[in-house]
Image 1 (cartoon, rainbow, N blue to C red):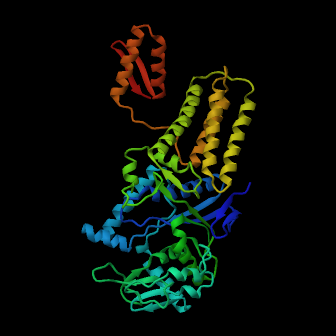
Image 2: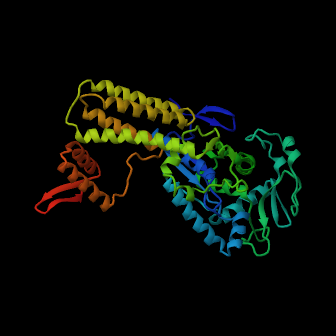
Image 3: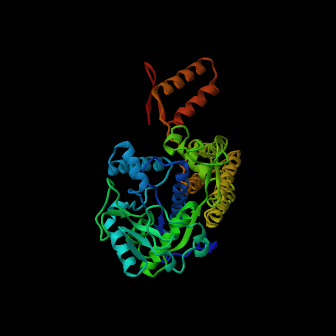
Length: 466
């Protein structure tokens, strides 16, 4: 089957055919680094990391780029309030970002470009737009002539006339038209700045992604992605800038994920429901948060609540328990049951269900449903009197494959304290004294699964880690 992607540009699903066979160029808008990321920011990070993993699973070589906005009005304001240098502030929150997303099971991008490292390229890009008549200077600022670009509004499906109704010129702006947007901003007293042909200043927000995507991936990319809130004006402006500058299609497929609500209300600081990932992962297993985020198809809105997260936790635990039970049986079995071809076929069918779901615009909700089906199938198989090593290994392989695409590990690494081990051994000794051999054997197997080896010595039972 061919992967289908809902392309925001066309407002419909389209077969995914990259420009170069077997290779994908993908750009995802990254964070503005002036604070820790909140769970709304985490949704696109998790979703597009999963898209990347699935494309790789399907055999594509993916070049994945996600930027850092490390100079911006919000950053300058935060640095001033904290009495901190802009570069120190951004470096601190870039490191915090990596810590948060790694905990969420996300891989680093192939490139994480920063605005401050591409200032010369940004200035050169704006100069070309100015030469072509798409940009003009006004008292140290440089603006983009929106009306000059004929395709403006094609991504958000709005006409220039409709946009004009809500457009206005802010105090201090000297535009030719209210629809025009800033490419370069003149520096205010005390602000960080760079030298340019238009005087000291810094880039506008929209120009950075156009420049960095082109520098790393070329004039045209396969997939450009981000949150629904970026569709207009950010992504619309990126298209206008890039296509005016190169004369080529900027991105062939545009993906946008839905919003996140908190207890059925929009997340905002004013409502007091603003949740940082750095805080929530101290209370909730980050893998559970990822599993929860993937439980709804990415284009749909998702509602975050403790109850729903606990449901996700219970669901993930069911899958992990099935996986652990299969592994335990594999370690204990010497049987080679018959009719294993039937079970191998059933496992393959479930794998097919997962692929069908993910091929349909990366429908992780239905993909997870297929994993639950695999879990149910495994539980049924374990009721068989005889089990085959080949079948058990195939269950584990497909569990790892499918959950690996979703970025979730089933092998929980829990630190085992010496006190916990000593307590279990003491409980086992007491069970044996009470002739409760079933409980003693159960504890022995539990210790074995924990990779704890028991040794009988003249001084009594000793243990060591395997």
